[in-house]
Image (cartoon, rainbow, N blue to C red; front, side, top):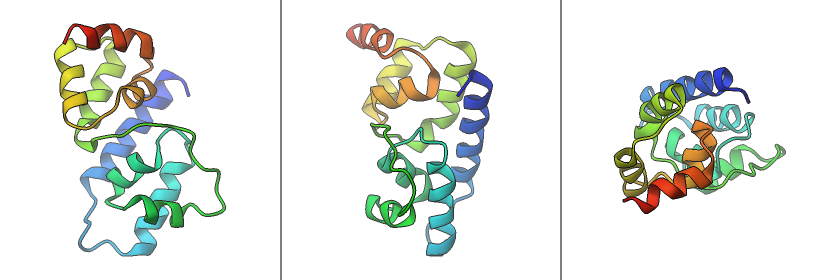
Length: 128
């Protein structure tokens, strides 16, 4: 996925997360959202669940018959807009990396969603 496609994907994910209603969302709609997100193959089962308000088991049930995501890591969906900003600038502040890691977004997910090499993120992490 190139940078523009990744930016569109992040904006779309943020939209799904912002309009989710975990109390009123029926399982069919939740399952469809899980399948839509999984088609891109970027996020882990845990990350898909965090965005859609589903458990990992529910995500697994929703994507039966689809290719299982190879992505790893966790995502705090509240970080989607910050990750989009990092993607657009190509740089990450050490403080933001600390926030991501403290609040549940893994280093591998930050790398996958921003295009910043994981080795670069490790160097920033050492400054924390």
